[in-house]
Length: 557
Image (cartoon, rainbow, N blue to C red; front, side, top):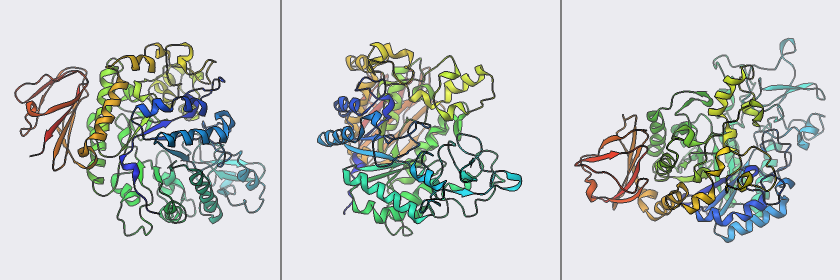
């Protein structure tokens, strides 16, 4: 089947189901709530929905510990509700992509329960090893969430590998039977009508033979032996050849610690070493989320605009004409962007500026639920109020006050509070007490307020998305960054043979004098979008107000 790359013209909206909207009144977000809000999602200009996991799960990692890949959890409405949402989304011209989580399963998955009992053919579905020296773990690898990467199983009397939570055992992708199971899962959902997959930590699925000790990494020991492992392209090509090539679908890979150069090995359109075409269509990179941290959000650093600009600009220039970018500011794995890269004191201004900053770059934008109304971080008063397993295992030995300070800044639970639909009780998310805490600022920040305000962040997102779809230069123009050394401004140009688009973004809380490039006469530009209603121009530039942004259109020379 011809693959049309329809995703290049799409804008996606990510739904984290537990916290989106409760439609049946039990306090848990569900597919009935999604059905209720499909027209709202469409009104943003969204062309597709990415669902975080909806599958049956014990909930150790909020659905990323899957116990059945071919069903929808009853708490979300089951398969009947999902099919209804799928049909209604398609009726509105929106695509639907699912989360594919096949590096690991839940320990409650029947495969694992049979594997630990050595029942064939499941004996080697997971990565089992006998105890090492003195009964210790087989190697010194670390897990991402809970201590070392090995857990002892009393039934099998061996250790199993878990790169994430203890109850998320890693699948053995080197076993061809496991790869066949993955292909069955893919075909099941694609035949049902799903339009593609976001592939969770997919670059982790191939581990180095022998699982050697890691004596180089001071933290996250072992990651160099399983990220981009020895058979990764072989396995992804197998999935492409046997399944994806037969559907006009989209694949989006999550890839920690990946550079544009490494990404091109997976997503370049013309790669001789990949006979089936690119392994995957787009890649979620983490570099743009490392402007205020080192490697992870829990290793905070002062925000560096230069670091952020370098990340975004590098992906724009190095992928141009070779592959396609995925653009994002928020998702379920990071705190809220206004609280990170913007300013809660200038919430409206910085929220709009951040939207313009990424929406006019080349690629497929993703908007995370609540981002479009400027939701901010959550600041609980006790560590016990947090739910996320990753958060609670960070520095558990620290004093409470110190842990809270870190979690307020870094916890992904800030992105998982219920969406704030109104100023009514429980933020209009549910009529019952929600499964998780509602951010206390819901009376000021909610969809009803944003809908009523013509100058809101929500209305700005709608305008920006309409513009990016209308302007061909956003889809095909080259990228050039100006003022690269500035620690206050991010200014870039998109250019094709007909148009030049200039995007100006201030990250400063005070006024900044900006001098435009010599060949730009700002008075001849058409101001398409602004978060202050207009620019204060001088002879060769402008006096930019706190977090000001402007999008200007010029005719090409």
